[in-house]
Image 1 (cartoon, helix red, strand yellow):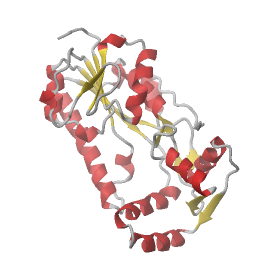
Image 2 (cartoon, rainbow, N blue to C red):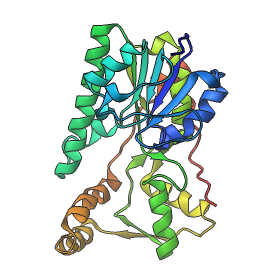
Image 3 (cartoon, helix red, strand yellow):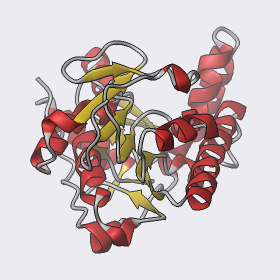
Image 4 (tube, rainbow, N blue to C red):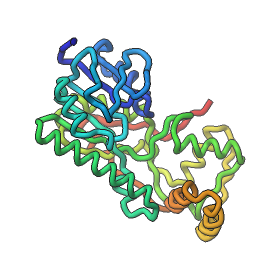
Length: 289
């Protein structure tokens, strides 16, 4: 097994952020030969298989002083962490979500369950690292996008292409801060070696504060289309989803709460990340083919 002080493991290489890690790692000057990208399924160059539910089946060809977890944080168990420590881990960065701070009182049980898993994942990680002397940083992004891949901005763009318009709830005045997966991958590498970020959690928002309606308008413009945004009152959304919920209950019951949040501010301050490790997210200017 290869042992050195530059070993870096990326867990969740096929995720939105994981796909952007190779470029961020290269830009940071990390030696390519010391990096491994793991997933439950085969990945390209420097890829290894890691089933987080069976960590001791993970038999890599090298040790890792640092680990970046782009997979869901609730997949990080104490058993997995013990295995990683056994492979040399002294530093770990993991992505959580600002949803932990905004959806705890959601009317939808599935969303509350996600919040509970995020909280449990963060607590497991921080408690283990404190006990074992591993430097830990948790990064909580806001609304993540990566054109053609995400389920946020890309989903809106797909609906615009299909309908030619986009319906919103009321004025859709709630603030949003879309953040590109590329900026998040860069943030992980920026924080990796900065001691000021050790044993802290950061909210990572995008480079612009936009109302939900303004965000949708920007997506229209990125598609080369004149914005056609139709504002419908909340009562119509409730009636419509109540009726549709009779046909497809699980899916639509979840979505009604997403619609109602169009008028709720989901704003987070990323200045601590700017101060501690130079985080600089780009403005919201999506580009579609």
